[in-house]
Structure formats: C-alpha cells, structure tokens
Image 1 (cartoon, rainbow, N blue to C red):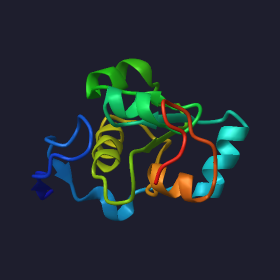
Image 2 (cartoon, rainbow, N blue to C red):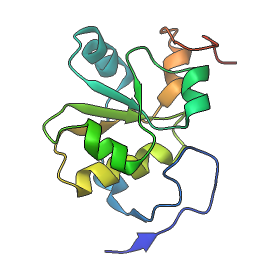
Image 3 (cartoon, rainbow, N blue to C red):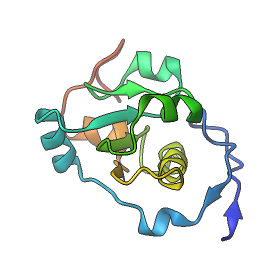
Length: 133
C-alpha cells in the first residue's frame, strides 16, 4: 500500500501521521443525514482539531479527541462514529478516519464539509463564537 505524508501544518493534531490512499472508498455522511443522526442521538460526533478550535466553535454534541491514543480509549469499535474538522480540504478528519478503520472500527464515517458546510446550512454551533464568516 502506497503511503503519503502530509506536509501542511494547518489542521489539528493528526497531520504528521502517514496517510494511506483509502480516501477513495471512504464512507461519507451528508449534512442532512448527520443532522438526523444528531437529532436521534445515534452518533458519536468527533471534532478532530485542537483544544482552542473546539473551545472556539464546534457542532453541538461533539466531543474533542486530542490524540490517536485517546480515540482508542474513548471509542468502542462498535460505536457509530462521525469525524469532522473545519472544511472539505482539511486533512485531519481523513487521517483519523483512516486510523480508526485501520484499528478495526467498522462504523466510521467522515463529514467532509465540516464546520463550514454546517454553518452555511444555518445549523447551530456551540463555543465562544457561534457563527463563522
């Protein structure tokens, strides 16, 4: 399997981890499906950026995971997990998605649009600021 290493240092704690080419078959979740899952309380929503980003703004119901080791401690392989970060070009959610799948987590999806897409829909945000510009 070909490995690539991210060189950009823009998003979260997971960027220096080598990433596989699994993004092609990645399971995604749409904004509407995520909203329904949140409303039904049927998902563990994981914001995969740093502490200050989480304190500033996140989707309600999210938990912040700070490291891969913490992800393994806090999440069960059977959990219904959605990972997200700032937007569709942020590689952090791709990296943690691959990490979880590589460690046997079966019910993992990525919300690719992240905070930007969520905010554009007018859905609520939590944190020190509650709107993005």
